[in-house]
View 1 (cartoon, helix red, strand yellow):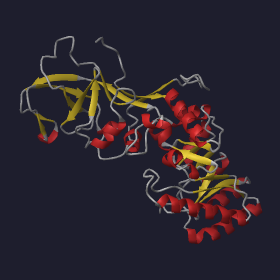
View 2 (cartoon, rainbow, N blue to C red):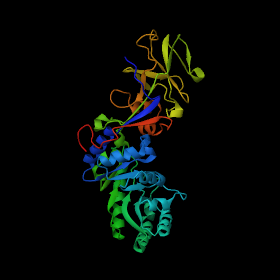
View 3 (cartoon, rainbow, N blue to C red):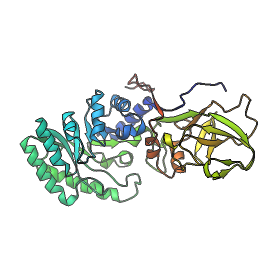
View 4 (tube, helix red, strand yellow):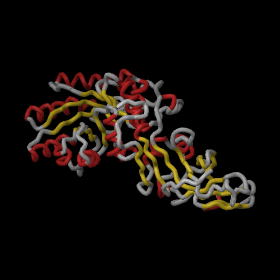
Amino acid sequence: MGRVTFPERAVEIDLDALRHNVRHLRDIADPARVMAVVKADAYGHGAVPVARAALEAGAAWLGVAHISEGVELRRAGIEAPVLAWLHTPSSDFVAGVEHGLDLGISGWELEHVVAAARELERPAIVHLKIDTGLGRNGCPPEKWDELLRRAVGYQDEGVLRVVGVFSHLATADEPARPETDRQVQLFREAVAAAERAGIAVEVRHLANTPATFSRPDCHFDLVRVGLGIYGLSPFADQDSADLGLRPVMTFSTTVSTCKEVPKGQGVSYGHAYRTHQATTLGLVPVGYGDGVPRIATGAPVQVGGRIYPVIGRIAMDQLVIDFGTTGLLDTPDSPVGRRAVLFGGGDAPAVEDWAAAAQTINYEIVTRISDRVERVHLHADTGVGDDGLA
């Protein structure tokens, strides 16, 4: 195998795969529109290039958690509707209104948003959030009528415009559970109450990625899809291919050094692992400082088309894999300098393999990759994917 020069450590972001995923989700949700959720730097994929690619593929909205994330998109020249829904009293509501962001309101934020709108002499655009059972933010059902009364009053003053009602699902990734039925019913009741209060609700949105696939009754006017646009499955019993998705992120580096060791060699801190036979160890220069979970011993790494396990404790900057044999060094088969792929699409290890080793979920694995790892965005210069569709 010939040597190829790779970045020391990089995540490649296949924007054609992302465009495919957005189109696929758009087709599933039709006639509802798609909000591409690009919070947390687009789950670690790069908010601005991902947002642009998602809009090219037909997403109608963008979703972020924080106002600052929405402002970043605006400063990059993105003009599509952007909803930001998670605030604190220190959030820059003036910036949110000034940059034309739609702002999610659970209750207490309303007066802060109104104050910003009055300061700017510009109406704020808001979506009212009802807590239908997740138990996080969102207005409690018993306070919903009061929130509607306040919002309508401010709307009559001309300082804001209520365009949406939304909520978030708790168990949609487990379609057999009954809680989603109850949440859908509560959401319908909340929308009806808003309409009775005099609000012309333009967008009702409840579905996340799993509900987009499994609960068409949750689609309403808009679906908010995060994990799915990155090509990952929210379901324990279905993978990306089962859902027609293509993983977008590939995380790779190079094997930096190798050494032959005897049976019984302790590996990494604490010697929590000892070799079972004479073997060749490979040093892979990524660790928890790069976002690799420290506890993911046993996770797979692909080198030269074969899969090898991580052994010993993962350190801040490096981890060790076991090639399971000797006699590789100083031969054409030496692993030194070869590409080491932690996860990605195709025949690479899956993100879910790393999530299982780390006792977590695929969302966390991709989102936690640190900015010490270079992002390389592929196919960023065109809105046409490999299936020829814009």
